Image (cartoon, rainbow over all chains, first blue to last red; front, top):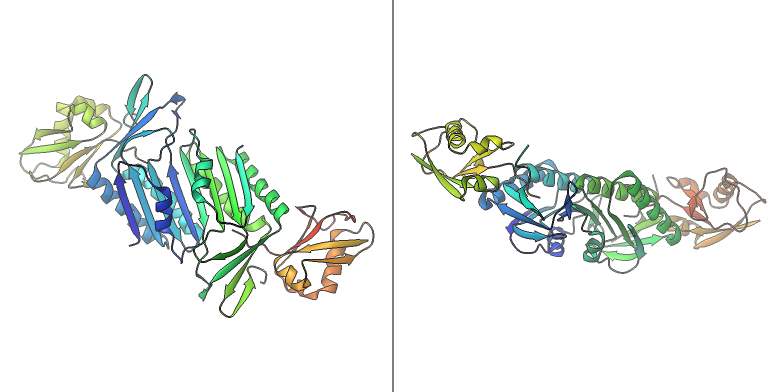
Length: 139
Length: 139
Length: 80
Length: 80
């Protein structure tokens, strides 16, 4: 299996993600880890909540992984995304890509996170002291 | 401290590297992990050896980290490099960069590994079944 | 025919439910469904945009709906 | 004056030692040191390139050497 896509509501184990993509043909691994920031546009955030349309989200993540495999010469591609409530510092998303040569790993990893943020049906709600808001919903 | 540069001859603990760069202001972390491949130009590699001119290597790695900090808006920059003998699958280098926004983390991480490979006085010897060679020494 | 709409994110808030049922004529395209949604729930016009997914795929406006389709409202995504 | 050269990677193999001493005139520039090295150890001309570091910094050819400098031969690097 060259691709591992998972969506779940408990902590992402980054070490396991890295182990999964490592192969003896890999020369480089690029990993993107999203983390919950304590602020957005200057306002303090104390919690995030992620909701997913799970079957479609998984399908779209697989599409992105397959596109990356067709565009670059990669060993393995992993996409893990969390759902549910996350505190500041926690990890909503991990993308890990291994390749014989590092340029492919970097390009593919960045392509995957950029595309995921555009097409995968997952929604983030930010919780502030004075309220909460679904991100990106309004102009 | 925004920068951590280390050169040592035992295993790099990737988890600790990631923890070190994570801050509550970070929205994204990009990590590059170099791994020892089992082949180079079609020839089977069974071992690598890294030698460093340690004081200068550390100085050059700090220069690269400082350049990255001046070029991009980053939280933390970590560069760990191993010396000594490494088997296939082992990790000679880890670069980890945290930033509020992912573009900066990706750009800086790639800049750091690309520049490290050009300027930091560390040398890799590849061991094949029928001999050994210092990489990049000859045209 | 009745179309059951799954709702996520702000769409769920607008509907006040995680699914609602909307009636459209047999063989209506997605565009007609959207008109009906915006008529019944005018707040959708205030969204930056929204998509309709049919059977777990983003659907074009001219896709013809059938009663057995799984239809979801996809407000602007913000995962990652 | 005697300059002690630290050697790494293939430079160590060419010297057959991790350091060697080369004699140059007082206040010689790096370029003169390089000429001397290539005269004594012609294999350096077969390298893709090599640099000289003085006191842990890459040195230009016109840098003037002194006996107290830490001087190292830097063959093409291949870390990472």
